[in-house]
Length: 149
Length: 73
Image (cartoon, rainbow over all chains, first blue to last red; front, top):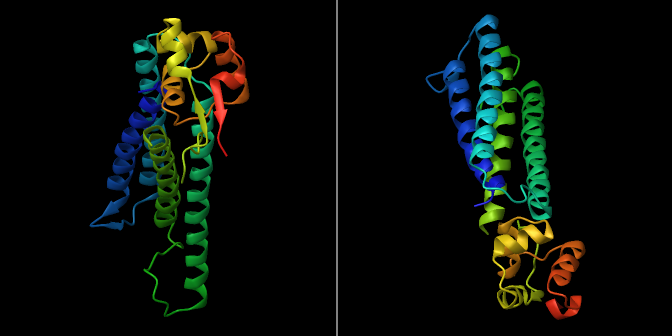
């Protein structure tokens, strides 16, 4: 398994755990809780710090165990570029989904879409951060899939 | 979604030539500036290398490019 693929596996696991932490802090009974701004700010900072620290630890551990040789070559770069593109598509779809939802909410009072109150700050923060996590996880899954196929 | 690399039309003799030269995959990777995993993927014809890497591989074996790689229509 290449260093790049190992990093993708660990990054995916770390992102899923940190996303779970973020979700636990922001939701209650499966719905976004009406938390205070102070609580949200603390959660946001902790989430960012956890992502940075976890990824730094992963990179350090992989570097320490490295046997030598070329770290990354053209195939790794091609796989990374393709996964980056997929990550961008996911972000594009999710953000546009949220915008369309907000517009539908404002235009059609009785629409059949699930209710997402984007006018509420906790819901907006939860939706945007979750979109970033989802795109990151899809990117790592795309990296792994390309190595495995 | 198709992984980057070979679409099945580029074949090669890298494994045979490497074994004939007495090189390990890691040694060949080191000589051409690639990872061992890329050499494995090239040998399995799951990845078609760039022109630059293909020429570097051919140079290691001291063979013309078209002896190492083939393109089938």
